[in-house]
Length: 238
Length: 113
Ligand SMILES: Nc1nc2c(ncn2[C@@H]2O[C@H](COP(=O)(O)OP(=O)(O)OP(=O)(O)O)[C@@H](O)[C@H]2O)c(=O)[nH]1
Ligand SMILES: [Mg+2]
Ligand SMILES: [Zn+2]
Image (cartoon, rainbow over all chains, first blue to last red; front, side):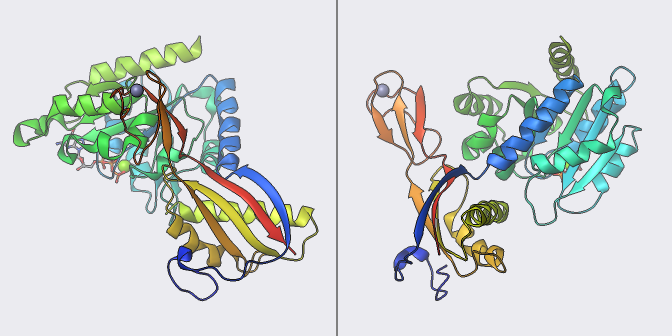
């Protein structure tokens, strides 16, 4: 919208160009977030902490995957969980019920977590006593892709009810992710979800992406996900 | 709506620079937005007035320069425009292409008084 007269869109006409002194700036608008993300990364490195950023559209099963994982592995590994949602502490409450330290970040109108929120969020945890920090991002396949939090890897969760074409429709997110979890595999018999196409689309946007199919209900595939976690952690601790 | 946060960064950076220059007022700010940056220029425009109220940028013009995306084919070297992240070389159909422009999200310059 034109800020002088409220007309739309701004390109339609030009008001008299203001005559002032020109200053060149050339600063990246994400520079501040990137700087804070680097600071987080250095902190995580100091504590040899493996940090994963879980991204997906709303309802793909991120919190359920976390609940299942924490319940199965907390005797073996020390977790902490940051939960990002616009409103409510429902997800942090669900995680806390497993006995794992959890902290909720409410973004209000914000559509993604940023490095600043995460930097303060981890102040609630004893990082020396933690092996893996899980960050559940706001359910949104678009905006979180642009905001580095200082994580080691992004894990994109796609549930089979969303359709196999999502990697093509939201390429930025799948390109930024290291692992794709295809969740709710137990529902496959009831759907027309083309698993092979889904894998092919994801590889097309990101040839390096790893893919694991699983179901929190039937528990199929969970061991492969746990092995992936263990091997990433081992690499981190080297 | 992460355009709100991006707009706040525009105002923050411009205001800081204006103060360093002892400016009384910012007349205009120019930002470059790549077509694959994930940011909708109209939404920046929409947020700008609210974000600039009460700052040195109040009443300033937000000038948005859109940058079209282009890529280079790693196999045959051809440079070509693209309108989405996924593209194959129009000459040899190779999928091995590197992005040359399109992801910009930069505050470029401003005019002060
Ligand atoms: N059938 C089936 N349902 C699942 C599975 N995993 C999760 N769900 C269900 O999917 C719904 C959403 O799960 P959540 O874990 O809350 O999803 P989320 O991604 O955390 O959602 P937001 O945080 O709101 O974005 C719940 O009803 C879960 O019980 C699964 O493997 N199979
Ligand atoms: Mg959740
Ligand atoms: Zn080519």
